[in-house]
Image 1 (cartoon, helix red, strand yellow):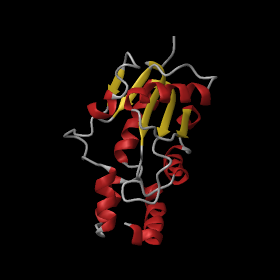
Image 2 (spheres, helix red, strand yellow):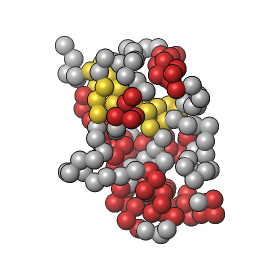
Image 3 (cartoon, one colour):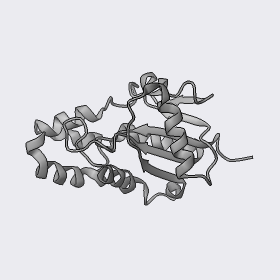
Image 4 (tube, rainbow, N blue to C red):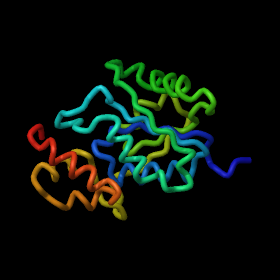
Length: 180
């Protein structure tokens, strides 16, 4: 019997930028799953208002937080291009995971930050875990909110991003202010 509730947890996020809400979701996955796969979506997008960071930078943000933790060896981070076919999205993702990590068991649970995020996988998973972003004990956070705070010079954005990533985000933003 495994010490974990699930064998292999999956989540998809854009992480534009990676923030404390994403971190809360991954922390829950690492506590409950033997293997954790985080898919960074929209890797074909970068340098836009909605998707400013490239895949490599987003992956580095997650690694900055987790590489020093003992659970890091159970965490896989991969990027995936979007497809414009919502009906096939869930199976597309699962096929990609199996092709990328054939040694791992098929994901048996999907983690999402909202019902909307989860609805793409209702047909693919018997179990979906919601990690609500609107919780009285945890501040609401979104990537859009953080990007707007950066754009308007509101330093409170740092309250929503791990200290390990603040310099990276600030440096990146200062170099690219013109596009935002």
